[in-house]
Image 1 (tube, rainbow, N blue to C red):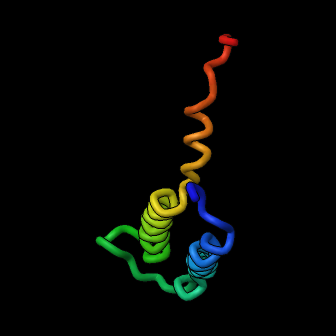
Image 2 (image 1 turned 180 degrees about the vertical axis):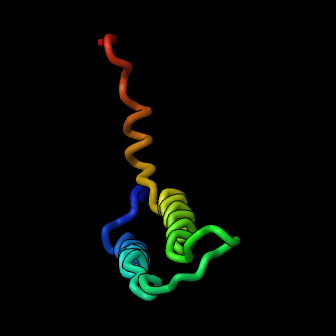
Length: 86
């Protein structure tokens, strides 16, 4: 077997959905809305939170690409003949 069966891919997809749902919930940072504190003397705490959130979202995206990138599509694209040749 060269490709993963759907039953083997399901658990991987489940934890990814949970992480995406957690990130979606954390995106609504209602707990910082009334906070007037600043970070580093100039940055509102809500903006600092979103900066860290963006870094975390990028890290999760990189992890997903490493774990769940569809290698079979890469192999399919590499095996095709270049355009213009019969």
